[in-house]
Length: 494
Image (cartoon, rainbow, N blue to C red; front, top):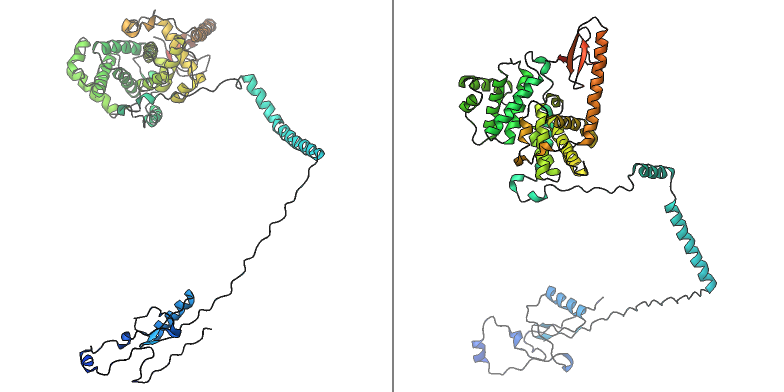
């Protein structure tokens, strides 16, 4: 513990040691002294032992303040002079703590291992063995990996390079109308919506009309569409409206053209900026119907369809699928030519709009010899593989091969013009046409067999069309089933 400092008490009236002596005649000075002046500050005595005085403390001294000064002096190991009412206090020697010895860590002596040449060779051999063992483990093939490799080699997959998927929207990133950020979501919605508005096979429910009459109507509508110079969307929507109305409403043969005229009027109002007037349609139909009849049928169609006109037609998918194929004017015209032939012929109604559009692109690439006929980019954006499109594509190519000799030649003449690249004059795809020809010949053979069978039967025979097989066959009235698929849903050929 630190030693306690004892301060000497001074008697009243005695002189403070080390203070200057006052003169005797101090009456005048005493009278002029301030009442509360600090007389201790007058002393200028020297420090203890005649040394140079230390800095004086002018702070009012209390016990707590003195304790703080002593504590500070001990910490700083310096002597502190404390003046109490003009008296100097002897300096307090600071207690030095004994210096602690630092522990020194002696470095361990380095161990030197001498390796002889024989030992080095043994280590090298050991490392080489380990490396050889690792390589053998990596190269060791299991039975499953061997079979997989053989399967890939047999299928040609191991040597087949992976096709790169082309970003078909890269050029339209800065085009706000292209809505590149949402285009994939939009076409995903179209894929779902096309199943909701898909038309079923309705011809059996129509007592007075057949697929031949429908083809005549559509051929005439294509001609009207050309004369009015309407957008392509209008034609596809017109045919969609006609089929959807005929699927829910029985129509007489006399009113079939009226349905087509009113459907094109509705589609023109929906798609065109300047739609043709009602009188224009009355005149172009050779005034077969009046102004009021057209408006009445328009109201009837909208009521049956519940004003639902925002539907995905084949044209919606054609615009996207042509973009996925390396686009050029010849390919584009060929695709539209095949698609319109498909719209005119009733058997394509069993296919969804996206299937017809994708098959038209596939058949057009075959016709123009655009290799590869189908790639990963088209598969991604269409959602169909090559095997899924082959049947519909063969059907479209068969219509293309018969277009030159068909009685309904509006579409053929349209795409034989130089403005359309005269694509209708090109030779159809032989690879797809050969398979289609085999099917036609087999249908004719089946028709001959059914005719011979009918000759031996007493029941009268009729020629009917099967919607499932898409061909005409001879059946008896007693058994109207198709001899191929045994389908009872047949219709008479007119």
